Image 1 (cartoon, rainbow, N blue to C red):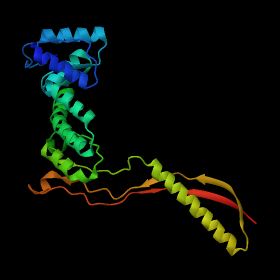
Image 2: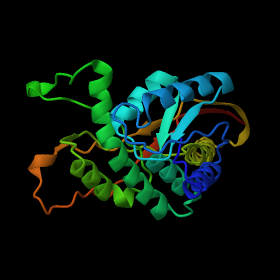
Image 3: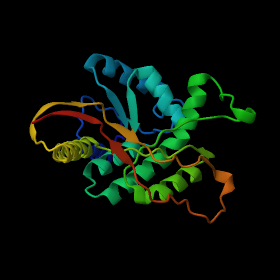
Image 4: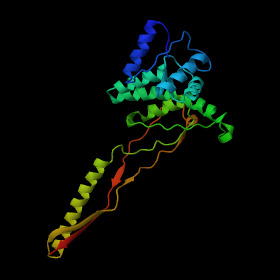
Length: 258
């Protein structure tokens, strides 16, 4: 859905192509600021019919939509609705080549999603959910990889209205290589100890009879204390102290001594 002039039409098609999506139908309307759907109610019904006939999985609107407009249109059509801002963020993220660039886009996505999360909670529940002290409560999970920018991400969440942050919880992204290294070291240590015991007994290690693993597991670091936004000064910057995280593998080995 876009505006009828040729420039807007071609630009909208270009954005859809850049986002690696296939356009199955195009609708235009002079005004996309109607309160219920962004587009007019009649045009929304046309879009709904096209979605049902084509099997389209998304509706893309070439304009900023409020949370309420997005919710109404998704409820009508039964598919995901993406507005212009969301589409551009998706394009930028798919083309970002550095961690820094991706992080900046993720921060922009947080700012984009936070008001929608609050509004969607009201719309889907028919009103604001009761929380502690009679205030509304909304939970958002945020995952990120660049630990150096943890403080900046927490500050962005607070700036968007988060007043209680639990975590962050730290995990190893891809632990298998670290676990394999731990297994190799455990086996080497086990063989070295077997040789030591054999020498102490005046014997030698003939062969390895069996090896079994008791299961690798994380040794998590202490979780940072959950913080309340109002406890920080206005100019303070969140800081996460460096630390370590351990992986542990238990290996049992049996050797034949002679």
